[in-house]
Image (tube, rainbow, N blue to C red; front, side):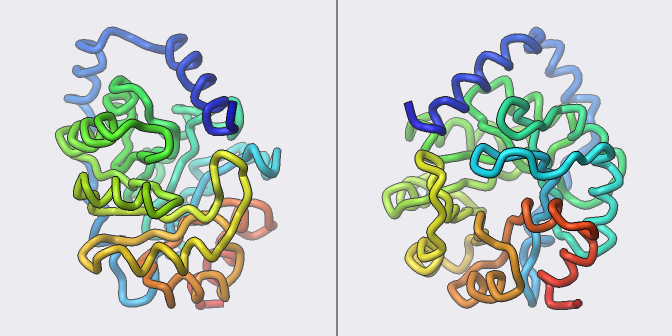
Length: 257
């Protein structure tokens, strides 16, 4: 079993402990605030940063305690983040839906629910708890699931960051007309990082699609490298939460510090 497959097993088990009737979830969705369109935030003259509330990862273990995710999210917003990503997977990343709720109350910019979306219920759940975007990992889904989940995301008023790691996965993302594609330099099956994936895949994504570089971004030079190969945005977690001043770290990535 690969790392990704193991994570998904846990995600499905945890989902069953909190599942409520879909009609009740639909009521929560209907009563939630209208989603924020993230597309404008992700297209800038420089490069956009999706800043992540991230306590841990399978590859690095514990990263930061983050006792107040709302305060961290406000710091991100105040220092130029275009979007805030909130990990909600519990077992490997230490996240929760409570983090998502707290962050939604604290900031006005779009929020990405970062999780392993493998069940229709999770999309209604994401919208009910305040997400504006969700993550669709091509490696975790069949072609039919990718198409259906992307349609459901749009039906709920959200956008999807469709994540790829190989040219084959990129072709699948393009086939379903994804409007935001993330190129992850970390292989989720082995956890190895290879930034050359940016050089290989980003230029193959049409210009009308927003391109996000994910993983392995820790310095301004990394941001510049991704930008040179076509990235409109970068997604950064570890480099922001591990230091003593996440705001200053974010400013440095944006080239302002």
